Image (cartoon, rainbow, N blue to C red; front, side, top):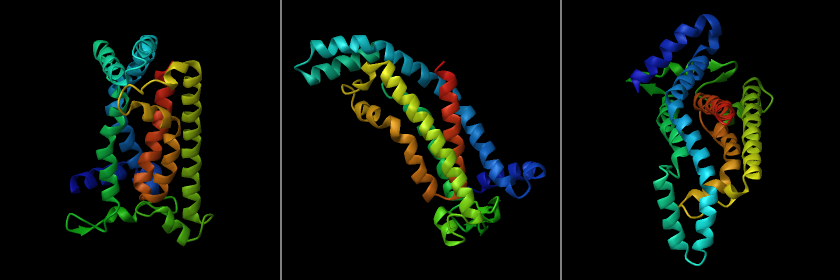
Length: 236
């Protein structure tokens, strides 16, 4: 943890001439961008997987008709189809899962008052008027919704809501253009439920941003915006 803290501090020192008191916040945004660059090859593979799964839908529809009275046989046939085509049904989840360690590192780093046997100096850093170790509840208690720290959170909420709306509209458009995808995944364990809730997942980010330390919230907001832009580019 102390090694990670030094990395954040060094990045903040490099960015101080540009961002001054918000240099640590800028360092977290930069760190998030570096993490997303590292997992970008997997995101590209996930995009190819989504296109490949869409191409398999006519074959899935035939299997659904063939095994209409035998759900277990249908599930086995669809899994075999994906294996034959070398299309992992849940490959799109991998980029998100690989980001979890970085998120939890930031969460822990900005949740404790001590680090490496000494005081956690990172908690003194801010994004404008909001402490990076604070939460929305702290901002509400210190000035309310429209207080200096509260306004920082309102800006983050607005950005997250905009990204979530873009993701929702893109998912709904995909379902409308490819109706077979709306019913796809019922034969693959877990994929059907994921397909149904996928358009709404981005809106849950609002809740997460409200309850985690601001530093972790910055990671989520940056990563969500990156994902929206990345998916727009990869879907072309």
